[in-house]
Amino acid sequence: MDTAFIYYKPVTGKNNIGRHSEQTTIANLLEQGENIVIYEPSKSGKKSLMQQTFLGMRISGKQFTTAEVHMQHVRSVEEFLLEFGSALLRAEATTPDEYSSIVQNCLPDTHFVFDPDLYTATDDVLSVSWELDENDVRSMLCLPWRLAAATGKKIYVILDEFQNITFLENWEKFIKLFEEVARNSQDKLCNFIFLGSAVNAMKYLFEEKVIFHRQVNRVNMTEIDPREITDHIVKGFLTSGKVIDRDLMMSVCKRFRGNIWYINHFASICDHLTKGYITDATLQEALDMLISIHEPRFKEMVSDLTGFQLSLLRATLDGCKRFSSADVIERYNLHSSANVRRLKDALCKKEIITFGENDEPIVLDPLFEYWARKYFFKMKD
Image 1 (cartoon, helix red, strand yellow):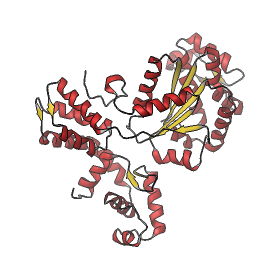
Image 2 (spheres, helix red, strand yellow):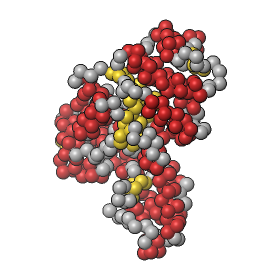
Image 3 (cartoon, rainbow, N blue to C red):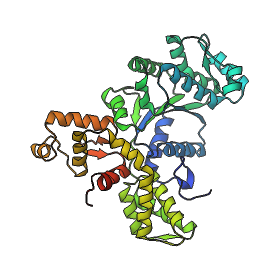
Image 4 (cartoon, helix red, strand yellow):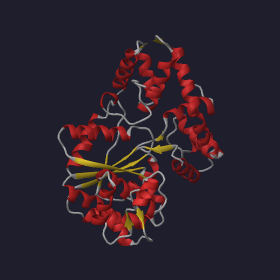
């Protein structure tokens, strides 16, 4: 169904708004042969940003190939390498003969194979014939450069949910080998885009462990201008003959902290609730419905929090910043400054909060923040 409010898939063109400076930055970095890392909460628009950037680069005449490695399910080195190799093969080939040729020519003397019978049965384009060794790992990590050299086109490899690399056994050893391969590749025909929605896990990798040191550039996603979001939503409603007050829409943007995924979903609900003017009552009903959809996830997020952890969350919602101060510890019964450090680490590991450049606490999910205030802690606005 055609709709102005798309929230169920990445978007480009007229449905993509904001982030123009980020698109320019990413395009420039990739054209200069640089690797990129982006870590923002889930549904912040990372995929839309990359797709719109690639679209703009193609429109300007750039020739390249993209491969997306989905790491959500990855739990072992073998799983990663198979997903990595399969994404690259599918980016460059479409037929069994082409898959077979790439494996034979670009992965010689390895245990990776293209099995036509397996392909027919499961659609898998890559499998292993024996237990993998270091030569297999190194060869697979070199595959994008070999493919780029063979085709003469740059290849950009997106590693989605990259924080899952820590689930691999001996992941630090694996990362060192990955870094070495990337560092020793003299040409700039291949570049990586590391994406992660677990903000604190990605911070641990790229800021604390400092992986790919001086080999990767972080791109921050700024909040989309509320006026641009408001224009987008107002125009969307007008296409179906509906009207919303701009000031009301601006307040919606503030409520969702500019999260365009939530806003589009919210607007889609409003679009189905009325045939004419969108009132305050319509907005509240739509918000209640949106909360109802996400409430099971929010309840799960707080279900295993300890009393101390809930107290620190409450202090965050109250606007506290210096958790270790004596008055905050006493007011929220946080026990001690040492306990505060443990509580901060716990909420960060659960990806509920993160800390900004000035060490200010930030609740990662704006709708969860609203739900926690109103429905969990029953705080007054």
